[in-house]
Length: 234
Ligand code: FES
Image (cartoon, rainbow, N blue to C red; front, top):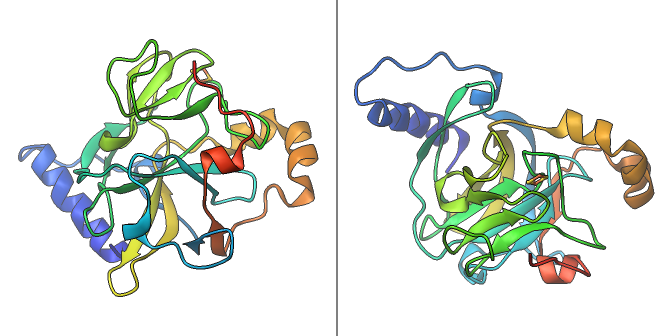
């Protein structure tokens, strides 16, 4: 979906979801935040094809900054638009999945509670194909730090735990001719400023001086198991 279609679908979705009620005033986090476009590619630099993603498999890429990880998932079934709100009660409409089956979604992998995120060494937050130990259902994004759980089929809405807002969505466009995916914006409660503040020293060691550089052109997506040496399953 291109940006214009997305904004149109947001308006249409919001109208449906509010059942005729007046649309809320959109605050900053309720609007897409545009960033440079980045086509998703594999480790060889070849474009990732949406139809070839393994369903219910946790992929990771970095966007909109070199140090900010994102989960990419093919849920294997369509994901419908969802009305959500940030911790500041800014209402927004997540536009749903993209791709041939409208099943491909992407979210910032920075936990909305205390900013836990996947690194090359360890990941306490990840997508779980089957029920996590303290889970309420299968196919959730689970953070082991304090057991926040997010539903990737519903815009990463919080289902349980201390997180007070959904994971920030990363918006993707899908080109049906080439079956490629391109990240172009975020939507929802961004936590990037808090993230860079909290982990300034750690990120400078992990990523170096380019940590806050924008990702542009392309972004490499890998399976979490290939990106991270110790994905924790709590
Ligand atoms: S940091 Fe994820 S639940 Fe606390």
